[in-house]
Amino acid sequence: MTAPSQQKLKVQGAAVITANRLSDGAVVYRTAAGAWTTQLADAAVVTGTQAAKELLARAAADENIAVGAYVAPVDVGADRIEPGNLRERIRVAGPTFSLPACIAG
Picture 1 (cartoon, rainbow, N blue to C red):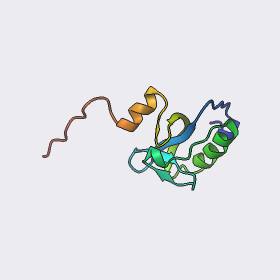
Picture 2 (cartoon, helix red, strand yellow):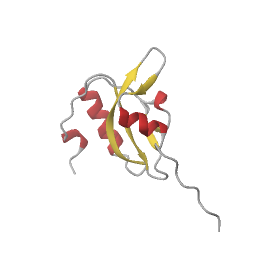
Picture 3 (tube, rainbow, N blue to C red):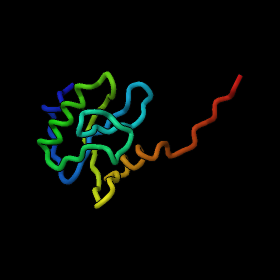
């Protein structure tokens, strides 16, 4: 596996670092303070390739909490942050189909 700092990465526009929480698989975002949050609004937003690489490298080193960290595009408004592509909109909203209910035995 290639270290995040060695990967070719080009950030155009605003982006965040996202991953999945190891304990339950929840979608999480890296904050400016170096923590993980499930709230996109609390994510650290970067706009340059170097800043994204640095944040990604720190996030990838935290794989005992969250795995599969990568850079995701976002759209930033005056008072909101929204996913910047279809994949991220789906990840924020959850599954696109109903999951079967567990049958109590």
